[in-house]
Image 1 (tube, rainbow, N blue to C red):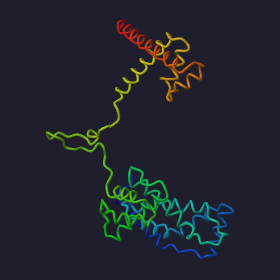
Image 2: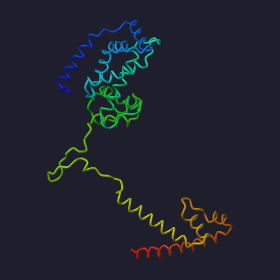
Image 3: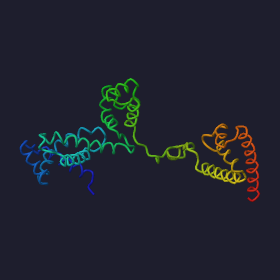
Image 4: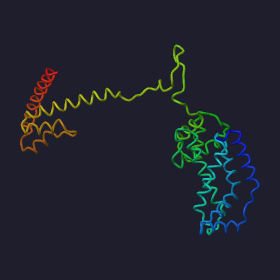
Amino acid sequence: MVSRPEYQEMTNNYLHRMKNLPMLEIDEEYQLAKQWKDHGDTKAVDKLVSSHLKLISKVAHGYRGYGLPVSDLISEGHVGMMQAMKHFDPDKGFRLSTYAIWWIKAAIQEYILHSYSLVKMGTTSAQKKLFFNLRREKSVFQDYDEIDLSPDKALAIATKLGVRIDEVMQMNHRMSTNDQSLNAQVKSAGDSTSEWQDWLADDRERHDVILAESDELSKRRALLDEAMDGLTEREMLIIRDRRLVDAPLTLEEVSEKLGISRERVRQIEVRAFEKLQKAVKRLSRQRMERH
């Protein structure tokens, strides 16, 4: 394994070597790009990439403020450069550097977003734009490290970047604070130590309570189904339409459905409900005696 000093020395040598690489002339760049595009000439693409190492390094150094090693940013810039080579068309008349810089920036920015925090920082284009421009906009107010922006400053930044003010506040807070491990040790009463996760409260209902309620509901439904067996077909239909559906029918609707008067429906419903109550009580008592 390479030690940190050795790794730093390798990085310094690499950066020094890049400074001595000459840029290609337009005609030479075009011919090399054509050889790569038409014939897959790997030597040509190697020369093209090498001639743009200065560009990769320059872009990478522009993202030093995010606390990541420049060498890692350069490596990701190489990835972006190779992606650019896959899609570059020399016949469109653009220089390779003009086209490749967008791929290099995209690769480095994606790496920063995934490395800056364990929590995903931005997924939409607007959030990514906010992430990479917030520091610059805060510098206008000279509030580089301010965790809580004032509403006026947040509004000004949100208006300029075309995002919501709450998105500016949230992103600023996340960028101004570090990730904290839930296993970090904290001191509690009595000088005893515990972890942060020991202090987290779960607002959701306990699983044992949920299971108990589900079991009780299943038993009640089973009792009701058994009690319903003691009803006539018409009594069962009226009880279901009037009491056991999400949108109960009116007496008028049931009377039209069965071809009887509303009063008759009401009488049958009352009698059937009383029969159900007695049956459920009887069945419940029987089950308790068995247990």
